[in-house]
Image 1 (spheres, one colour):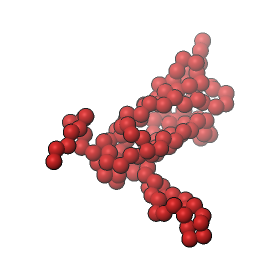
Image 2: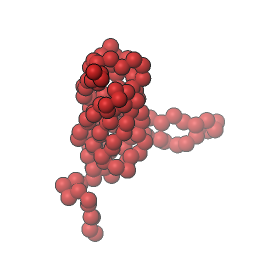
Image 3: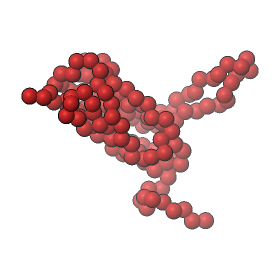
Length: 131
């Protein structure tokens, strides 16, 4: 059996071995949007990710979730809430898999999924104010 890979150096990894390869932030000129780049290892099972931006006082100012991404290289734009001041912000990425044992309980209630975190990454950035 032959396996054809688009990335010859990337052998798809099982969930417990998938890691964040790169996490970058590019603030856009309007001062309210940021472009986020997330790259993960090649994977056998599609991963999930939660991305959260916090200001330098620890308040969450933006968040998004990526569910079962089919791409290793992910690019999203995030909108920063509240008054944007020229200061340090941090972006945290949590890479995880959802473990679902069954869809419903014996009483017919939907079971919550269990989140199995496999990696995290964090980076800091500044949103410059227009002159």
